[in-house]
Length: 66
Image 1: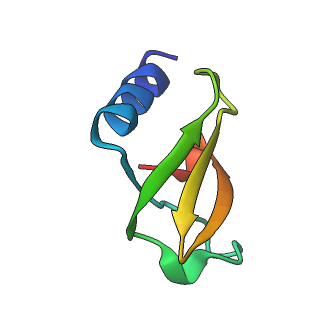
Image 2: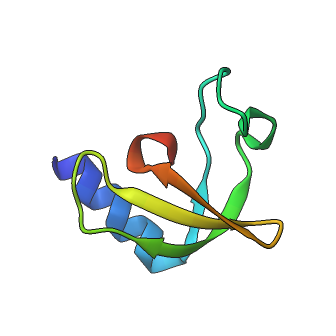
């Protein structure tokens, strides 16, 4: 849990997040790229992070974010 809190604090501080996706994800072609964060749910193992990608809001779990 401590690592999740640290990751969320870092994302909130910078306002940016880098994707770390599985090859089976439909957004895998964006893997490793940084995007602006729109919102983050309360810190939890399955927290949802909403990123702004090409004008669209897309939800990812905290596990899919570096």
